Image 1 (cartoon, rainbow, N blue to C red):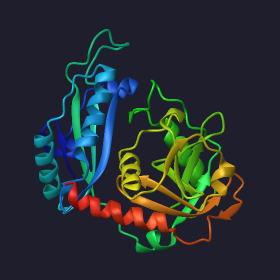
Image 2 (image 1 turned 180 degrees about the vertical axis):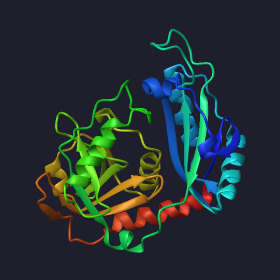
Image 3 (image 1 turned 120 degrees about the horizontal axis):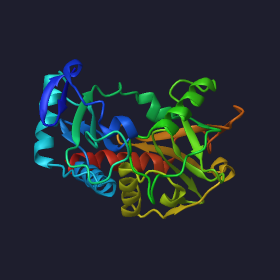
Image 4 (image 1 turned 135 degrees about the vertical axis):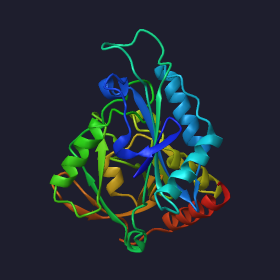
Length: 292
């Protein structure tokens, strides 16, 4: 695998980062994941804006060069024999002393990794998948709003719980806040439809302000749907007519069954993919053609 490190390409096994990098020592760093369509990253400007804003909050001196990054993504896709791919852009704080920092991080490290997209599964978008409620609570963000940081232990603990739960292959796990309010999936944001209103947990629940989440809210409003961000319970989700999750790689993923912590399974609505889910998935895919 060929990767990018600080603007240069190298074999993954030859890439080197100092053991004193504070991304490694203290988890000081951020990342973005997204996919390409016909070789072009979708909503890249939004991903880079979020990354730059987060780095500024952490005192990491990093300004993404969109033009250079686009060229690098294209080169790495070609070097790895991919027409399209899953892209991860990581910025670590860079090398520092052993101990907490006393100033700004002036020399961060930038890494770009690409890999093949997961195989497209038409049945996933026709039949949906299961969302399993987890006992693992969503931790509170380190600051006022959650950053897409290198502190990923909470998500990994949640993933381990999901794998050990007996949930079917491909199921997503759902975390709640410590207060019992719906939060988000392990790698996704949650949406559901109740009484005709499209609802999603608000940012102040501590969820990641997802790029795809924000765009789907915009598309829903453009389509004339009522939308709402708020604090919701598991019982409200059980009564929903439609449920879906959003990610930058899998787009809108329909949820057709809900399982509680004990494995008791309920069908969402009538068990079929709902009209709003279908329309918004179509609108999203059309948008990927316009926004490159």
